[in-house]
Length: 301
View 1 (cartoon, rainbow, N blue to C red):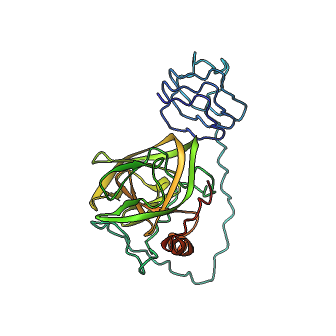
View 2 (view 1 turned 90 degrees about the vertical axis):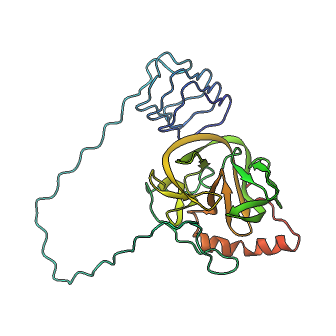
């Protein structure tokens, strides 16, 4: 039941989302992906669609205002699997190099990666990736405007209300100042991943943003049910579900220590674009300027 009337959603990925009863009147939907989406009761009146707008496997498209009667909702035909070659390979005479076995990490109670120094975090980064798409875009590195943080005085602010200089919860019992925003876009709708936990917490973040999980940093797109995440209290919690959602705004606040608790869960300020330790080091000049009273503008506003 979300209202997207007039929104620019070109290229947005709604695949797997629940769009029942949503309104897309007058929205720009060229290149949007509605594959396997239930659009029962939705309204696309006046929406701008083209041949690149995909509804493969979509449900409830019949009698939906604004959708053509001959809308193709068929699943794409998979490419045939090539037959394996019958020729036997020549045996190799080289001695195989043994492959080292990586140790299995056990999630810690606090889950907060230890920094290597006084200012630069050096967390374990989980390289799991559900696909090969690591391209940077506006929808890959932020939180929506509705994301919440806790201030040192006990108040709660949304990302849309947050300001440079606010001291926000950055780990259990610790607060850190926001010194700049790498993204702060108030308008537009973007694709996110919602991660829900057994305690009832739910965080909404973009797919390539890191959160603390399984004792290290894991990109949101790689988090799966059964994984362990860390609450703002420092306690562990279990992921029970993930799903694709669409929300307004793109915000990425950076704190002095590189962490921030968003929607009750401990996250990094960094993404898969640059290794978090390197990214934190590269921002050292901005932290220095902030500490001497000079604030940096948002780099990607």
